[in-house]
Amino acid sequence: MTVPPRSLTILIAALGGEGGGVLADWLMSAAHACDFPAQATSIPGVAQRTGATTYYLEIFPAARAALGGREPVMALTPSPGNVDVMVASELIEAARAMQGGFVSPERTTLVASTHRIYATAEKMQMGDGRFDSGRVLDAARVLARKAVLFDMRQCAQDAGTVINAVLFGAMAGSGALPLPREACEAAVRERGKGTEASLKGFTAGFELARASAPPEPAAAGVPHGAQAYIDLGVARLRDYQGNAYAELYLQRLKALHADPQLLAEVARHLAVWMSYEDIIRVADLKTRASRFQRVRREVGARAGEPVIVIDYLKPGIEELASLLPPALGRRLIGWAAKRGKLDAYNVGLHVRTSGVLGFLLVRGLAWLKPWRPYSHRYHEEQRRIERWLAAIREATPRSTALAIEIAACARLVKGYGETHRRGLASFAAIFDALVDHPPVADAAAQAAAIRRARDAALADPEGKSLSQDLGKPVVWLSKAP
Image (tube, rainbow, N blue to C red; front, side):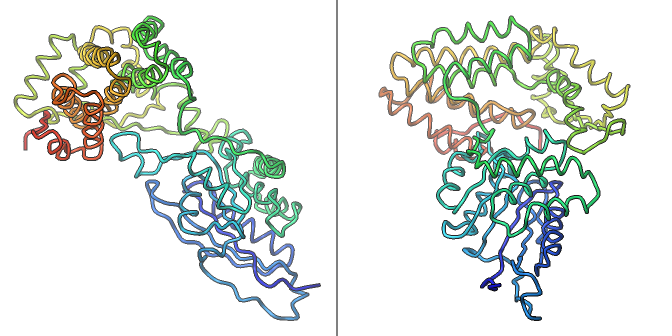
């Protein structure tokens, strides 16, 4: 037989808990079963979703019997432009690989899942810091010789297994490996743990790759079009506070139906703002059956196997005041702010919500949902929302672009504690300086000023950039030094 000129190079990028090491072992076992020389190395990643653990393999696709006692020389690390099969267990890891030059149109088959697990850099942003998944998918189609892209996490969940099995099947189904399907499946069986589920996931990945399934959009956004946003908003708010609250949402949107672009923008932000996360909402989400089912699925618990869930909570004066009647809540917040005590009495709690007492304690807070419309926080949020909507309605006849920039200021209102206070301070400063008292009469110039100030506030949570942009300090209530 003709001896191939070089080894096949494989680079795998997998997150913690996704079985990247097992995937590398499966590949090595299948290669050895075919009597192919092979070598694998790994580079550990870091925690908190700042990167993946990478595994680099080289497989020489010729049986040792044909080599006449010779051994191929293999590298320990990959080099840009010299990777035959690039595997990424998550979409942005595929983007990292492309940015690093490990995906080339002359050589590389890219096998990647289109789902998202947001990176630390994305979650740190004050606004929507998510990378554009569409750009990554477009780049994959251009930069890879062949791209196999679909939601492999969903396939793994459907099969009751870990994503590494689906990745292995997609690699085999892509035709890029010199390993027959039988050898790959035998490697999975040889492992002896969760074999049936792993083989089911392997088969799903193999068949989708073999069929050249079209890339699926990553689940990083919501459907386009105003009606899609409205439908999602109604469902969200019905779950949050009931039918009457969802109807209030629809009533608030009626005045904007003439402009689909503005309607879609306001519908999106309004649904999120109206479903603000107070202690009642957090308690509700933490004690739902679906949440415990998801935890069990993520840790791979078998039927009947106990799973202990401990929630870490840190309530303080603001959480207490948010539940009080408006007058009492205002007085308590005013007293604490005057003395710099807003964060002074936060109590750290470790609540075992998988136990009866811990579950009832947290669930008891969720049962306060009927009280929410009578609470201080509810009245404050509705007052701010009405001010925001009034400004949008007033700006609409002048300029749709201006109204959209005002609507986007809702991105500043988020989080809790000091983060929430800073966001509110930036929101109020922009409204006072640029919306209620605009320095220019031209709508386009006003819209540009609002956009510039909002971007400054989102880029710098300390408020220094916004203060420079507005020409005056941004002040928020904070704890005493």
